[in-house]
Length: 364
Image (cartoon, rainbow, N blue to C red; front, side):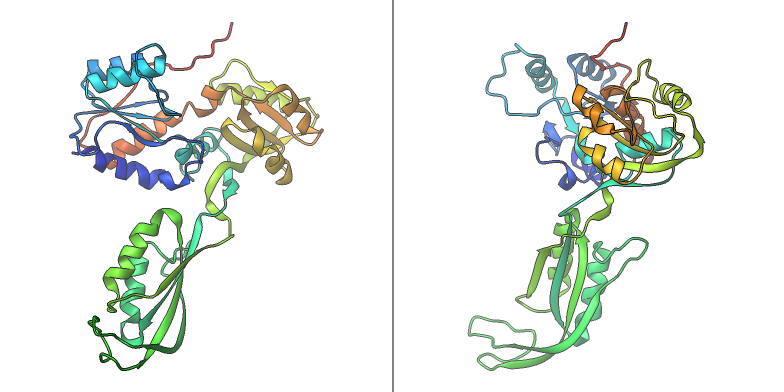
């Protein structure tokens, strides 16, 4: 099995098109055409993790955090990043990272937190913008159903619990083939009037290549007229964070203890207790201070995240309980999530979960 087959499956779960602009995701070290021996799943790719991969005979490391965020000008082994890259290359070990692509996935990082906290009716906290596009094309009336079917099979026209959605308007198309043309309908040098259907469908940005290929492959015309435009609609199935409800409300002190147990953390930093019950809970793995206004706006009783700074806690303004459970702790279940996903997709292939705790923060 090749690296490209593994990464294609990962990108079904976490399309790279949804990674944040600052991020560095995908295959960071290696060759997509290389054969995979075993997969080692980790939270961070450290030198000890590469050693573990070597020892266990795994030549593909699937990591949540990318080891490379910015370009390397030198690879001399002076930093932990350089040492990891050097050792990986020396031992022909490939490294793939999901990071914010998995953060934005509906079944990703925040889904794992929501599942661990047993939240009900969970939805995306911050739906992603500029991720839905509209395709408009024109097909001869007798061929329109073939084009629509191909577009639907490529994933266009999916809206919530519905698929194969399109809008169609009948009209007259005109064109005149020149001497270089090989027209499906019409004659060289003569204007052709053709009954056509204007077909409109929407699609998510990560499906763009497949949708356009389906259009061009299924359309009978030599030159296919089409338009693609970005929509301002938010995508309710893609985005950062999640918000849901506990089955039963609990006191703030009980909720904090509940967090410690479920997220396996010894310390929870939090804003002032408000003596209010906690039932509606927003979550965002990793550094999530930017989502505090969204959590308040959606009337969450508590917000679970990490890396809150001193002044971030002031944003609670007696409206919400802000909790910081630690960066690693908020993302700790991603390794389990990725391992389970890959094992399901490739049941006859060795998917190993790293035994190394890569959390750099210690508590005394």
